[in-house]
Every structure is written in structure tokens, then in C-alpha cells.
Amino acid sequence: MKIGVNLPNYGPEASPDNLAEWACRIEKAGYHYVMLSDHVALTPEVHNLFPAPFYDPLTALAYLAAATDRIGLGTTVAILPYRHPVHTARVVANIDRFSNGRMTFGAAAGWAAREFAVLGVPYRKRGAISDEYLAAMKACWADEVASFDGEHVSFRQVHTGPLPVQRPGPPVWIGGHSYGALRRAVRHGDAWHPTSVSGDWLLGIGLPSLQQVAENEQMPVPALAPRIKLRLTERPLSTARVLGEGTLAQIRDDLELLAEAGAHSVILDPTYPGEHRAHGRTDQDIEVLEMFVNEVFDVATGDLL
Image (cartoon, rainbow, N blue to C red; front, top):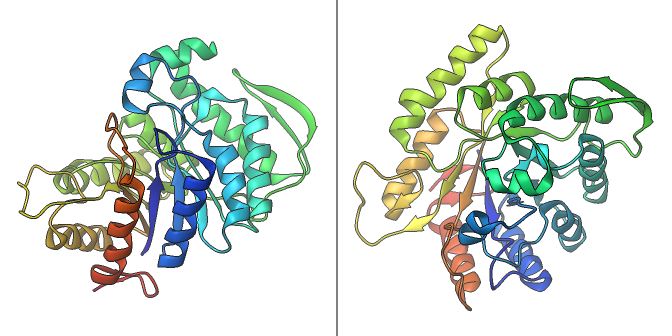
């Protein structure tokens, strides 16, 4: 099982130097991924949760590709309807080239209705648009000259080079918990990427639903690659907690649960929407993450300590 970190690319402490420091220290600690979240238009409901400045994840990942050597790079998650799929496919392929094949494309349909309105994208059609855009992106990654015909995007004989290093394209992790998201993960994803869920929900509802959707679609069940919180507490939390919150022992149990459920990767998320990231918070988070790999998880072997 691989392990990564969701870096906060927003808020008062966000800066190019800060993002590079995060990525380099996380890489030095042995983690397998650094991943960034996505917003384009910081409308009030978005800004309340993810305050400016907000660094675009794809631009920032291109920057981090040069600042790092081996760690995987990715989005958790890019909002598919916000950008034209030909453009997104090209940028993702470029980052995969810059990083020599280290890019993972985490994606979802989005939730912020007013952000969709600013961008002129129909919110109620976001699921259908997302499905089509993913198919169009994969067409661009597959061939030097691509064509695609759909309801929301069509193009003919587009030269797509440079193609990504990873063939037939970077891994695609699909976020979201709805039926549509699960179906998207089955049809288009290499992995399902649920976020901030409880162990009971994942084992009792999420994974069985994913398996049922795969059976209905007559397709393989995608791999599991969740993003969980990382919030250490001195005392154990109740059973209603989400995965990744609690004492070291509870979080170790969570990782064991995920390993037994077949997770091939887990992304740790030290961010909390709406929380003010005051000066010094970055160092505190990185120190916890460095301690984590010394006391809980062996990144070299993928085993719990």
C-alpha cells in the first residue's frame, strides 16, 4: 500500500516557496504522492472553505515536478467540467512528461453551484459532462492525432503531442460517493477515490455499492485509493469518527482496515475546510507527517509498524 499527502494549495500560508518546501520534505520523508485540490472561481461559499490565495493545481504540479525527483504528483481532485478536455488532457500529459511519468489524475464532477455559474458551465449537467470529458481526454492520450464525437464536446484530427509518458495515460482516480460517481469510477477510473468517510460507511455501503455497479456494468471493480483525514488526538474518538481521525492506535487500525479492504494507495489529508492556516501551521503538519512514517507506516515496504 502506498501513502501520500494532500498539500494545502490555498490560504494565508500558500506560496510557491511553501508548496515546494511541503513537497520536498514529504518526498524526503519517503511518501509516495503529493496531491493538490482544485477550484477556479472562489465564490463566497468556496472562499469560506478554501480561502485565497488558491494556487491552480495543474500549474502548481508543473512547478513541483521540477522541485522534486521521485514522488508521485496528482490532483485530489480536479473538477472535470471546469476546463475543456483537450486542454486538460494536454496539460496533464505535459506534467507527466515534465515529471517522467509521475502524474495521477484525480477527478470529480464538482459541487459548488455558483462556481459553475461563474464559469458558464451547466451545474445540473455536470455528471454527463464529466463522463464525456473523461472519454475525450483518454482519446487525446491514446493517439498522436485524436477525434471525438459527443454531445458536450466534439473535435476532429487534433494533434495531441506530446503524449504522456505513462501508457495509455496517467492513472485516473475518480472521486465522489453518489451512484453517478461510482458508475464513473467503474467506466472510466483506474481507482475509486472516496474522501472523508467512516470505516462503517466504506465497508457497509461504499464498497458493496461499487461492486454492485461494476456487476451491473459488467466491468471490473476499480481499485480503492481513498483520501482520509489526518487528525491526531490524545484521547480515542467515538466510533462515529471518519477514517484518519483519532489516536495513533485508531489511525493505525484505520490503515489496517483499508489494507484489508484492498486499498493500493491512501492519501492523508491534514487540511480542514474553513480552518485558518495561521503562520507555523505548515511546519506543524509536516512534523506530524514525518512522525507518522516513523511510528505508524513504513513507506519502504508499505507495511504498518
